[in-house]
Image (cartoon, rainbow, N blue to C red; front, side):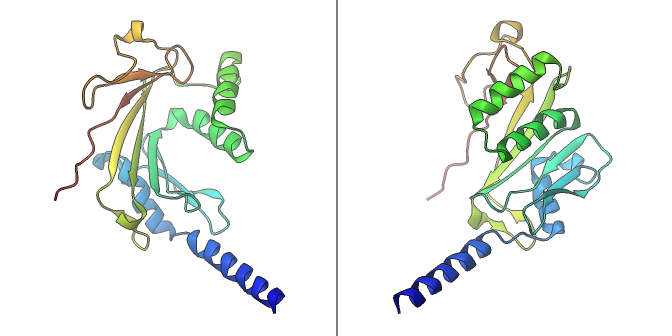
Length: 200
């Protein structure tokens, strides 16, 4: 009896895990992914999303400079991003290292070394990343539509410093731009708009 209950429990767990990682349709993933892009860039952006097996694939080939990533259904919460295509080698390398089990620090250190050695190329011009996040309950998985999301902005400027840009090392006012990881390959301007306050 105990064995039967154990098997039943495992079956329920497996079913629940599978249900939690149900992958939305390609159309829904595309619609959700481009929420991170400026409105006039959405229609022509390239979009990568997930197959039922959890593999990242190209869902739509675009014609402009933006690449958008759909939400990873295996992760809690809703997070999509769009970035300039010149950042793709940097982003793709990070995804590969993350998949291999590397920690955030290991990924940073490895990419820093690879950029310095010339193995990995970073854009020579400032390049933008947009990140849109929302709570799971605010997202319609069938359509890819989301509400009450939060959009933040990042501009990569490799090896820039506070001194070379005049930017502070931390924000001193709402939405104030500041520089993160100065003097490294991952130097970037952070812009975090104030979050909407809940209304009573």
